[in-house]
Structure formats: C-alpha cells, structure tokens
Image 1 (cartoon, rainbow, N blue to C red):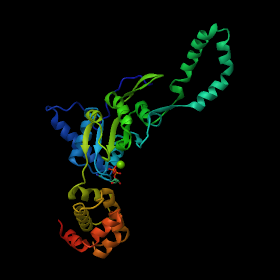
Image 2 (cartoon, rainbow, N blue to C red):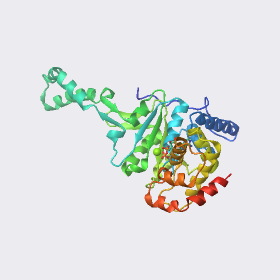
Image 3 (tube, protein in one colour):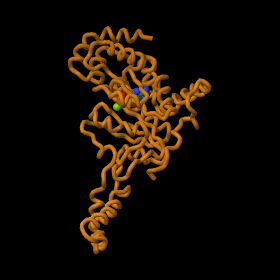
Image 4 (cartoon, rainbow, N blue to C red):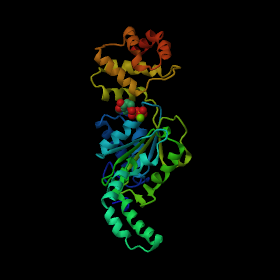
Length: 333
Ligand SMILES: Nc1ncnc2c1ncn2[C@@H]1O[C@H](COP(=O)(O)OP(=O)(O)O)[C@@H](O)[C@H]1O
Ligand SMILES: [Mg+2]
C-alpha cells in the first residue's frame, strides 16, 4: 500500500491542468468557483486566499499560511477539507515535537506480545544454528517480520501519506516547533515521501493538500519557504470583515454589523498590546446578539470591551475614547 506512485492531485473542478497564459481564463473561473465553494462552508476567502489555494492545488505545492493569530489560517485548512470532501489530518506543533509523535511509532506492546506468543517458534528457528553468526542471521529474518507496516502506529504525517482517497494535511503553528523538526519536514514537502529506516521510502498514495500555518513567533527557514507557496493573511478590510460577520453571525442586523466592524477596525489603528482579530469580532457580534443590542451605545461598549481586548491596560487605554469611537462608527459607511 505504501509504494504506489502519487496520482493526480486533488482538484476542485475536475482535472486542473497547469496554469499557463493559454488557460488563464479557466484559472480565473476555477478561482471564483473556489471562492463560492468556501462560502458555502461559511469561509469568506479574499481573492488572494482563493488564488493561493487554487495555485497550490494546480502546482501540487504545500502552502505556508502566515499572519497574526485569529485571522482564519487554521479555518482555511478546515474549509478546504470540507470543500474537497476529504478528511482533515491535523498535526499541532509544539516545542519538542519529534518524529515519533509526528510520523510513526512502533507498536511495542504488540511486538512484545507476538514475541511471547511466538517464543516456541523462535526456539525452533534457532535450533541447530551453527554458531553465533548463523543464529544472528536467522534472528534478522525474524525481526524483519516485527518491523513491518503491520507493527507501525501511524501518526498524522504518515496517515496523510497512506490516505488512499487523499487528505488535507494541516501542520498547524509550525513556528512553535524546533528548527530540527522543520528540517525533518523538507523531504515530505518536496516529494510527498518519507524514509523509514526499517521499511525504506514511503510515498504518498494520493498527493495530500498540505497547509502549514505560522503565527510568526519566529522566522521560518528559507529551505522550507522555498518548498511552499506563501500566503499572508492580514486583518481583513472593512468590507471583507462585514462579509465574514454576515456569514458567521447572520442574526446580527446590517446596521449594527457595519458599526461593529467600523469600531473594531478603528481599534486596530490604536497602539495596543494586542489588537482584536476576526475571532474577537465574531465573539463580540455574538455578544451583541445575546444581549439584544440595537446600537453601539458607549456604556454597553465599555461593559463588553473585555470580549474584544485581552489586556487590562488595553481596556483602560480604549475606555476614555469609547464615546468618540462609537460616534465615528455610527457615521461609517
Ligand atoms: N475569512 C473567514 N471566514 C469565516 N470565518 C473566519 C474567517 N477568518 C476567520 N474566521 C473565524 O475566525 C476564528 C479564528 O480563525 P482561526 O482559523 O482559528 O485563526 P488562526 O488560525 O489564524 O489563529 C474562527 O472561528 C474562524 O471561523
Ligand atoms: Mg490557528
């Protein structure tokens, strides 16, 4: 099962051919279709996002998604899996993440149990062996059996390579892992294959769609960047953020949505320790619905600032400006 050649990459629209000037109109149609597809799963993709995902597919390249926390990087992989109807296989990165957790482990318990059960057989095998060298040769034949696919416990990366029908592989928050782990990923990202000393090279049965995300807590190495298409997701502009809120919190009225987004956008222009991301805008929109707010009234805003801002000093900084900011938000188009 592990030796088949990669088949065609997964496609949004039948068989995508490589992008050339000759078929550029097809690419534009496919990108628009990708955008509409995402929307049916509640994900509002900018042109840049839809284009990057389309290209990653057409070129069979992994995509490295960078940007501040809470702008929809993880959700992009989830939405892509829904859109393609493929399982999402997620590897959450952290400091100290190693191959055993990311790739595979041997099923030690099963190996031990089988050795116990096959003890007699092992005795038979060794019987009559002539000297240590011959015993060792015979023992090697035996350990080939125990270090085979049967005894492997696949972890996310191997699961993605073995997924016959393809998968979306999300390597989330790669900036949290160590540089050694990043180096280890290079072979996988270049050729969609990995090397297991006891088994040799394992190639993807079907090329998975790979997303790596980073919150930029450290610089990602050049070698890894070179293997990936790069997508930076910034905070959305006002129009895009309104569409995201309309999709995620449809109960919120149009006028209030416009005001809420204008208010959040103005906070992003202030000198804060942590400006609110899309996730906070969504939480605040839900809060407004729950509390039956009809307009952004200064006292109400002050009372719920903790949904938007996560540092007390930011809350204190904004507090005095709330009347001005709500007035401007009410006038925003
Ligand atoms: N473009 C978008 N369309 C719909 N929902 C979005 C969008 N961007 C962000 N979200 C929502 O914002 C929240 C945070 O997104 P997430 O993917 O966890 O952010 P990140 O991985 O960048 O930290 C999620 O609830 C997600 O559904
Ligand atoms: Mg995330």
